[in-house]
Length: 249
Image 1 (tube, one colour):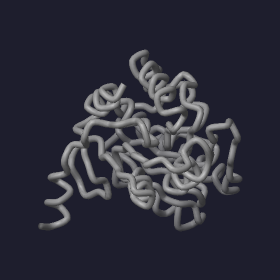
Image 2 (tube, rainbow, N blue to C red; image 1 turned 30 degrees about the horizontal axis):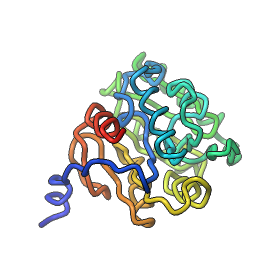
Image 3 (cartoon, rainbow, N blue to C red; image 1 turned 60 degrees about the vertical axis):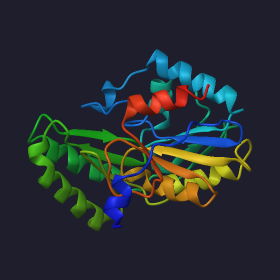
Image 4 (tube, helix red, strand yellow; image 1 turned 180 degrees about the vertical axis):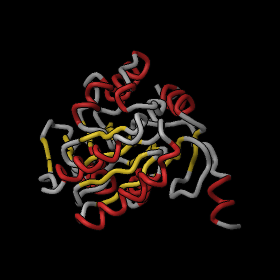
C-alpha cells in the first residue's frame, strides 16, 4: 500500500482517555475554523469552556501550539490556556508562566516593508507582522498565489529567514525553534513529564508536532481533509475535533 493510500485511510482516534495523556492543540483549523482574515477569529464560549474543563481534568497537561502571537492566542482563548507555544515555537510560555523567547531576526522590518509594498497590488492581500515573523495572506486574493509564493521564496533566499508554508499564507520567520521543539520542551517540564502526548493539527506547519509526539510514544491526529501526513489518526474537521475532546469530559 502506498503512502497516499495509507494516509488517506487514517482511522478516527479512539475515545480520549485523559488519565495519562498530555494534549497539544493547534488553533486555526483545529480549535477554530479558518477565517478569511486572521483578525476575524474571535473568542467562542463553547471553546473557552472546553479548554477550561480540559485544563482541570488534565491537571494542566494542556498546551496550544500555534503560529499566532502569544497575545493573539490569549485574546482568542480568553487566557484559559497557560502553556502556549506561539509563532510556531519562537515564543513559548511554560505552564508556570515563564517566557522563553528568541531574538527576532534583524531583517524582518525590511521584509515586512517589501511585503506591504507588494500587497498594494490587491486589496485581498494581508500582511501580518508578528514580531518574530511576517506573514503574507492571500486567501482573499487567490489569483495572487503564484506571485505571493515567488516573492516569499526570494526574500527567504536573500535574508536567511525561514520560509513557512501554510494554508493560503506564506510566512517568513526567524530561524529557530519549531513546533516540535516546543513539544520536546514542554515534555521535559512539569506537569507534562511522563505523560503520553497527543497532538491535534490541520496543516503542514503541524507535521513537526506530529513527529515529536511519536518520539514520546504518543500520536498525531490530523484535523481536516486527508493528505500525506505523519499523523496516525484523522478527524474530519474542527467540529469533529471539538466533539472528540468534549466526549472525554
